[in-house]
Length: 456
Image (cartoon, rainbow, N blue to C red; front, top):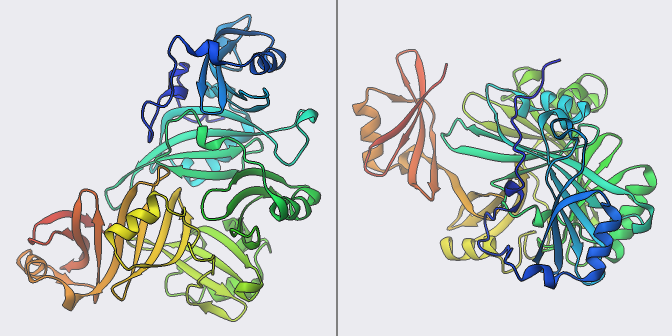
């Protein structure tokens, strides 16, 4: 059977290099003395065969870098590892282990190959390949249960010419459970388990755990609590507001659900009436969205369709195709209160109102209303701004841009254009035609054609 073409590094250095945050991981000679006896004892109990142990301290955690003893290093099922223990009481929270490709479970390899990231014409493995084991926050620590995911790094140059690097997470049974763009290289510190609080824990126990599901990750930093879970072999994303009230659940569906009854027939029929639908192969991602009473208990479906130039979302409910619904998520719109994202928006787009935020292909996407125009911002896993995009009419284009189109022998093929702002600059994306050929041009304010995309 075909294997994933990944060369996984065996060095533990990949687990320790800092990315978004610099110089926080202190591995100076004084660190071993700062590690508590509780942490050392817990480590020796959990990993009695550990070799080449080196301790460092990271915030409230003592981190042990080590390797496991094996009779044959070439056939070792585990490579270098970082185990995180709370320095105060020795409670184990997480272990990250560098893997070789042969160590990935077959179910994970199959899940990766079946996902869009397994398409070698679009995505290339970076060599990052890790096993991440975390304390199960929904079960007593003493029972030994843990949550295990496998992380594979991939990269691709998108149709917009932007290099995209993602960490894609798979459960032990090969289900894609998370995607993080531009992830911080901080030894997975951002993946440390968080204990759910109050009504959040009660909701998860009743609606996930008691139904046979598992809570995979909890993030209680983004103006509320975000949860990734698995139930009935599907990934779920749940959001709770700052008052610990459930707001929505998004459930992943798959292309085969269009024909196997997984998606109601009336929803599928409504989808097929969209001008963007050509066939089932054009359907990339599918989500079912269920909301709380504050959002009128609405349920709808989101279909991401691949079109000539871009991916387009089509929204469908029992009434047919609808406009994009807006979820009321509270005052912050689900953004980190006072954090990098909110501060960036306030500075770059003063007076902007946050309409909605969502995740797509590992990016945080934030829709704002600024100067009467809806704009979509994209941020990576380090909360770094990647780009902003919005639509304008052709009559709003600078004269230098329209002149560049005519001088190049092109004619406009659409009555709208996209404005794009990014750290590298600003440009306009226009759809044009020359003879029988169709193109998308990227043109700056001075009328310089920066990029020509041919529709083949």
